[in-house]
Image (spheres, each protein chain N blue to C red):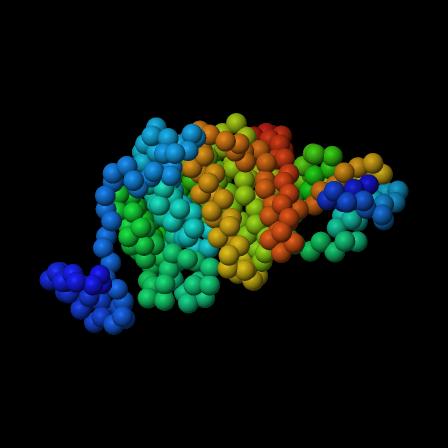
Length: 65
Length: 280
């Protein structure tokens, strides 16, 4: 599995997006998440189970000006 | 002052007034205002195949609204005024604070305490007297957003909070206007263009007031909004000129600490409340 274009070594069966966020300590309140190019809504972070070949992107959406 | 030239009465009077108001040091040189609108001013624009005479005319006839006259809005406004954009609207309710000066390059120490719209408009008129500057000192509110945005060709989102960002995106989608989105935090910046036929902010992320980071809680290197606001000005001008590759449908990410750039594609999202059937 890839996270933000880099190999993610801690993939395991049943791993969810939320699991990756917790493991990688993403704490920013507004994130944009894409799996294989498809945008994933926050309510699905617990539901989407990642496959070993998945390409996951997690991006901080900034708001400052 | 140039050696040998005698100051005119009005110049003496103006300098005396400025000294009285503390706006001019004794050693400040005189300035001659260049107001000519002959061919020289935009020569380097006209030399570009993508601009030329027709493009410069398009810029001079265009109307750009900048929401937020802060870190992003400062460079965007200055470059658009310098480029001769015909009408620039500035929406901001805030006053200049001394802590703004580190990055908000529209303002000087003399502006602290002034309304940002007022100080910014004065600065832009100094830069280019041919540009019409309109100010909205209540900022962009739920009440005035449609009326204000409806008067412009392009909107630059240079604000610092998500409720206003969603308001800009929603009204731009409704009225068919491009929304040039820029945002910053610490050393990072993002730019995209939400425009008719493409995704909007709700396609990217549903609105959730509980998940809205407070930009004021984070530091920012002063030049970072300079980079991002300048990119917003470039995107706005390219949109007006109808040239180049727009950031519509993709978001550019810059990490100026590691000095790396990345981008993601933003698809129109069927779960977006504006584009699809979802609720956001």
